[in-house]
View (cartoon, rainbow, N blue to C red):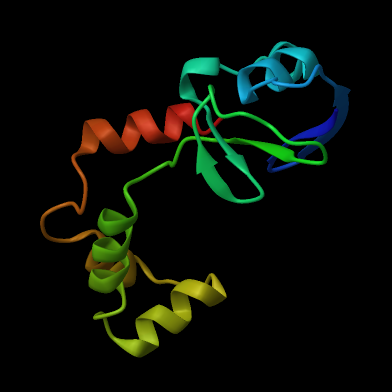
Length: 131
C-alpha cells in the first residue's frame, strides 16, 4: 500500500511517499519515511494525524492515507486566548501603534505593566525552544 508522510514547519515542507505492507501502522510509515532522522526532530515531541484527525502510532493505515507529523503546541490554546484577551482590552490607539511598529516607551510600559500573563521562566524557555 502507498502512504504519504508529511511534515510542515516555518520554512520547511516535506512530503515523502512510502510503500508499506498491508497491515502497517502509523509508526511503520513514519519510520519508513525517515523524516524524523532527516529533519532532526525529537520523536517524543511529535503527535500524528491522518488527514487532520489525531491518531496514535499504532493506528492501522489504509492505501492512500496521508500521515501528518504534528509539532507540539508552543502554548496551551486557552492560555493564549487569555493573553490575547488581556491585550485587546488595551486602548485601541495603543494596539494600532503596536501593529504599526510605532509604539512609544509609554506604550511599551503599558503593555508590559502588571502581572505577566505567563511566568517569566516559562516565557524564556518558550523563546529558547522556538529557535
